Length: 230
Image (cartoon, rainbow, N blue to C red):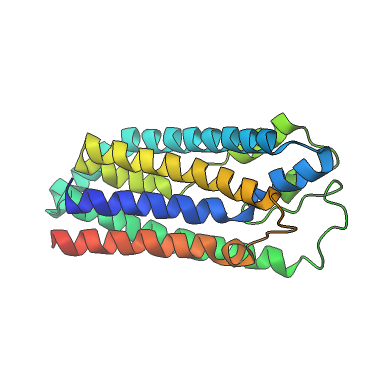
């Protein structure tokens, strides 16, 4: 594995873990399990299914981006005289900074409007990060909860997969597998941990700064790729 491929693998894994720690990936399952009296096994299974769906949707978005964007970036490399790896790193820097700042500012505006948490989690599930609370009005079935959380792709992984595809099939598969394992493992692990005697885990730091940190990490990897290819 090349140095660049290893950096992309680390980036995909760290992005997956930080992103999955944002409460909207697991807190709804914890709250609903208390309201509906789900067993720990059922809550973990539903969280795992949502995580797998989340991974699948993200992979589809990444694959489509690679299919559509590869000819464009190859043409750009020819016209600018830069390597594909350099341009892939530049993409990570631009996307990471833009995404991180945009998501952080959006999250800050949402939390500024929240006066207090709901008294009954069954009446309203306030999910951080992806603004999922607009989906939760009244009762919500287990299948609907899995679908709502699972169909939202991790946008930060898309440029990572695109850059990994430049490095080759091995780098692409490693980044994709690392993201999948870390995403599902983190979501299920935090859900189970929250159900085992912890009264309330909210992880407000990750709710407020998770996307900003992820964007910064992706940008840092992109910068290292650019410096390596310069």
